[in-house]
Image 1 (cartoon, rainbow, N blue to C red):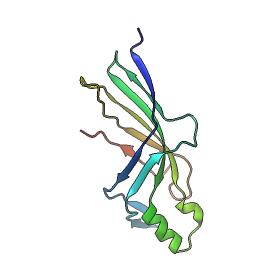
Image 2 (cartoon, rainbow, N blue to C red):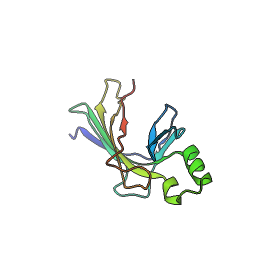
Image 3 (tube, helix red, strand yellow):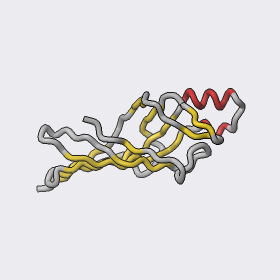
Length: 130
């Protein structure tokens, strides 16, 4: 009997309202809320595995990160349109499967190249909730 279950991630929409600080052109900027949604355009697809033998869950989410308020500000300043495009990223998360079969995932977010946020200078992590 196989103790692993593979699953597809088919829907994700989140709004992060906690303050996020971006340093842009030497100044700290409050970009407003961050929106996260699944990016269905990439490959491989967003998917995960539940390993019941080890009580471990893993998932890789292909996502788009957007800052609509900041994008509007940049657009109003006449900035390069590349700066306001969504950021493509992959969230790689792991967590423990609980006795009630729920799980809480956390892990790093790897950014793809973007005109505004460089992977070398940007760190993003999904922290475990309760």
